[in-house]
Image 1 (cartoon, rainbow, N blue to C red):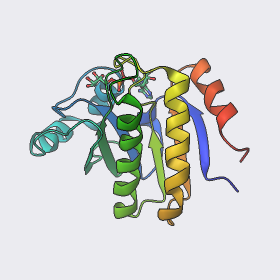
Image 2 (cartoon, protein in one colour; image 1 turned 180 degrees about the vertical axis):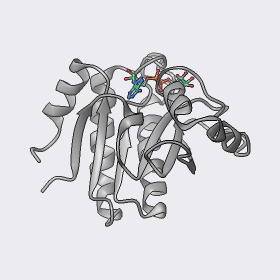
Image 3 (cartoon, helix red, strand yellow; image 1 turned 30 degrees about the vertical axis):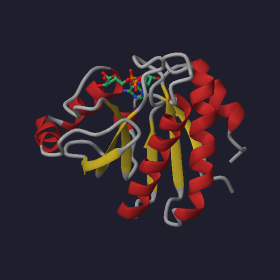
Image 4 (cartoon, rainbow, N blue to C red; image 1 turned 120 degrees about the horizontal axis):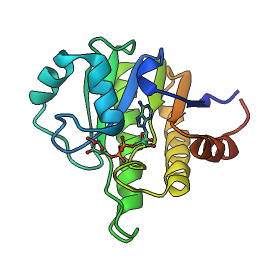
Length: 169
Ligand code: AR6
C-alpha cells in the first residue's frame, strides 16, 4: 500500500500531525501558502518564528501549530527559480529531505507538503513535482511511523501532475 496521497485544497484545513510551510529566509511570514498558514495559526506562530533566527534555502525549522489543526509546522525555504542552472533542483530536493528528517524526529504519523517554490518562486510545476515525489519516496523508509504523506495541490493542473506520478494507493 502506498503511503503517498494527493489532495487539492487549502493545506491549513488538513487534519494531519504536521504541515510544511513554503516560507522565505526571514521566516516572518509572506504571501501564498505562508500567508495562509500564519493567518490560520494566529499571531503566536509569528512570535515563535521570530525566535528561530531565519532559515537557509534548502533547510527546515519546526514550530508548533498554534491555532491550526496540525500540531506542528515544518518551515522550509525553497529556491527561487532562475533558469535551472543555479542548483535549484538540489536545493528543492534538500527542502523535502530536511522536512522528512524533521518529521521523523517529531515521530509524526501524517505530514502534508504544499508545492514548495512553485508559486511566487516560479519553479516549474512538473519538474518540482518529480523532485518532491522522488525525494519523499526515497526517504519514507527512514520514517517508519509516517503512515500518510499528502502532497497538497492548489489547482487542477498540479493535481493531475501528482496523480500521474504517484503509485495508485
Ligand atoms: N494551501 C495549499 N497550497 C497553497 C495555498 C494554500 N492555502 N496557498 C497557495 N498555495 P507560494 P513559493 C500553493 O507562492 O513559491 C511567500 O510569500 C500555490 O498555489 O506560497 O515557495 C513566502 O513568504 C503554489 O502551488 O510559495 C515566500 O516569500 C504553492 O502553494 C514565497 O512566497 C507555493 O506557492 C515562497 O514562494
